[in-house]
Length: 269
Image (cartoon, rainbow, N blue to C red; front, side):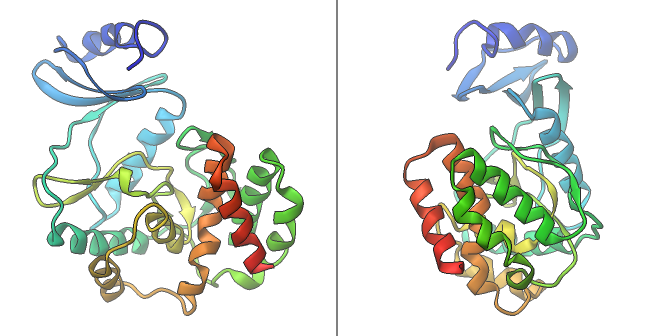
């Protein structure tokens, strides 16, 4: 937990208390994230870049009928975000099946734009511009991220092939940063989503990232496909849609993420 300073509780506490009421002792949940009560109400407080985009993403996901529930946005104040606290329980088969159904509903919500939305994936900046098509969206992100980790020459030939590699579909609203750390198994029996990088993209983007840091249970996949079809060949595109998050992690952390990204690129070119 950070101490006093820009992102310490001593800095944000008066801001939250002034808007929401007297605070209880904050509990650190990691870098720049806390659990705290304000006037007796439990909240999650997050401080850092991009929280305004995150709040807007939560609102967008919350408006999609049948989508996974998201925490209520209670306060946005510059680099500070407070949301309602979600009580968690043991992960269950019911949670996993519901996640598949709710994600299918999210991806079925009407959406008209490629891109747009958040300018951040975690703590990595991305270009939030609306793009004319999927190849422009994913090609732009791949080239920009690859340039920041000196892989542009390797990635460019793959970008040239995206029109042939990507499925021919319209855009869907996607979470955009859907790994297991951003799924909460609610004590109410529902799977909740947090920390979105919401934008218009391919549903396969969310599903591919969900399996990047832990397998997607078969019951989740089956429940999804019972509610919503994926374009033919989606299994062969899983790694293609993992390239953006792998390059994000290469930019932020380096290490083995770079070699994973390089190996995927070479399989598609």
